[in-house]
Structure formats: C-alpha cells, structure tokens
Length: 142
Image (cartoon, rainbow, N blue to C red):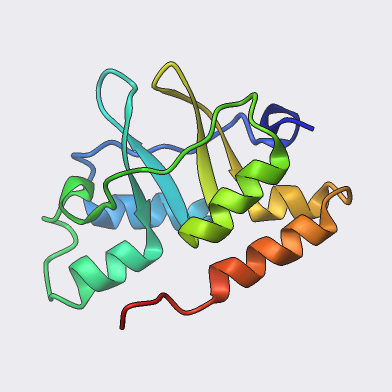
C-alpha cells in the first residue's frame, strides 16, 4: 500500500510570517500538534510543532504575538513521496521520532501521513507498533 492510499489530502499548513499566537490557534482548532510551513511559492520550508512553540518561544519568554513561525519552526523537513510504501514511511517516522510526515510531490505539499492514519488502516498494526516504539525511545547523545 502507498502513502497516497492513507494520507490526509486536506493538510493544514502555516506561513512563515504567521505569528505564533495565530499558529497556536490553528493547531488547537484543528486538534493537531504540528503543521508544515510553506513559503509563498508553496514549497515546504519547515514544520511547526507544539514542542517548537514551547521550547523556542514560551520557554525563552518571547512574545508569541510578535514571534513568527519562521523564528521557531523546525527546519530540515523529513518528508515522503505519495508513491512511497507505507512500511517505509513508518520506518522514517520511527527513525526521525516524528508522528507526522508531510507528503511532498515536486516540492509541494499534497498531504500529510500520520501514525494515526497508519493505525486506523487496520492493515499495519505491527508497523504502527514498531513506529510508536521508535518515536518514544529516548534520543541518543544526551
């Protein structure tokens, strides 16, 4: 099965100049913990996670109404192609310790695949379990 068979094609995206307060509202309203950040050309340039907001804005006592998504987002986005096999997407999630991957075709976002999408498919319970184990393992090097 391919990523395109399970991905959510209605991806919520953010712009880099969006204030963190607004981005937080968007994440909360959509009950998601992260969203891809796209430039004016539609190319994915980062991911904003709730953890980014806490560690790079709140914890540093930055004003979230004056801080932009660009200032706190995670750069170096890990992504998958829509034709990628679900098992490989699960391995990438585990290896990178992420629960969501932007699905990119030609540099543009076409969807998002999440661990929840894989779990709800009922076909890949073992892969989902292994992915969750990989995500929750402590990072090495501390």
